[in-house]
Amino acid sequence: MAQIDQVRRFNRTVTERVGVLHDHYLGRERPIGEARLLWEIGEQGRDVRRLRERLGLDSGYVSRLLRSLEADGLVTVEPQLRDKRVRTVRLTDAGRAERAALDGRSDELAGSLLEPLNPAQRARLVAAMAEVDRLLTAATVSLDPVDPDHPDAEHCLQSYFTELQERFDSGFDPALSLLPDAGELRPPHGLFLIARLHGEPVGCAGLKLPPGAPAEIKRMWVAPHARRLGLGRRFLAELEARAARHGCTVLRLDTNKALSAAIGLYHSYGFQDVAAFNDEPYADHWFEKRITPPSSE
Image (cartoon, rainbow, N blue to C red; front, side, top):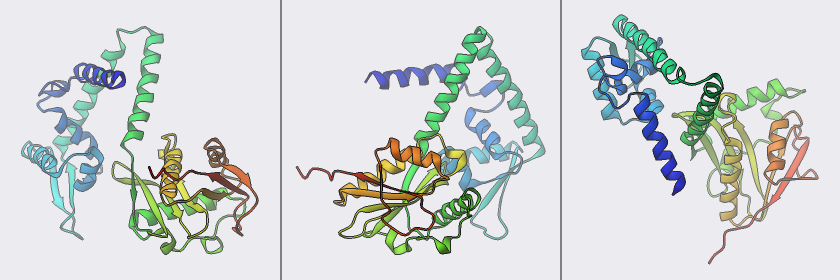
């Protein structure tokens, strides 16, 4: 309860200090919701669906905000030529001018938060803000089971293979690797998880659940820009829990010597080095961890 109280106190302080309680955010003629949309649309415009996912807002609310911005001549919303169901929102010249004005006011607000503090306090506040930002971002990531043929799964796997090609001394050819068939990563034989940040796929991990054999983690990857959010450890915890519920007592994985950060993660998570248990040509290290199925009580 003390943690909940502290979070609520922090929320109250922040909302008061940054002015989100006012209808005219930063002294302009619009509330913070409309201002934030202008920032997120950006110079290149944005798919309305992606905009909703990025901000975690329902479609009705976003539509109302966009209608208000359209009425003020700040944005245009048009269907894409190749798919009329997909709408793209773009800033007008007036919208870009408004966004620039909001940027200037936002800089002034940031400066007003720092100005009363001495240099050491400023450094502490900025460092604390960076840590809060990182942790809040980590808390917004979802882990969702998907079919291995889902477009987000294919995107993550292709990005993973591209990174391995760049990092392995010998390069990486998926055709030479012991890649699991898609059926091995579908229930009841396994599963495939996708990590999504603001609706965008930023990581993946598969779990094989062969009958009468140890569970095996396959193709765990996190996008470079989403690292340091604890997703690797979160993937391991989720896959271990699912393997345990399946009745498995041993969890396995293999990896390449070039993936030193992954090796360190596996050791810190309780995996032990073991002898090779497969013929994966790209593996230099093999790991196992004893796990405990949940109690039936």
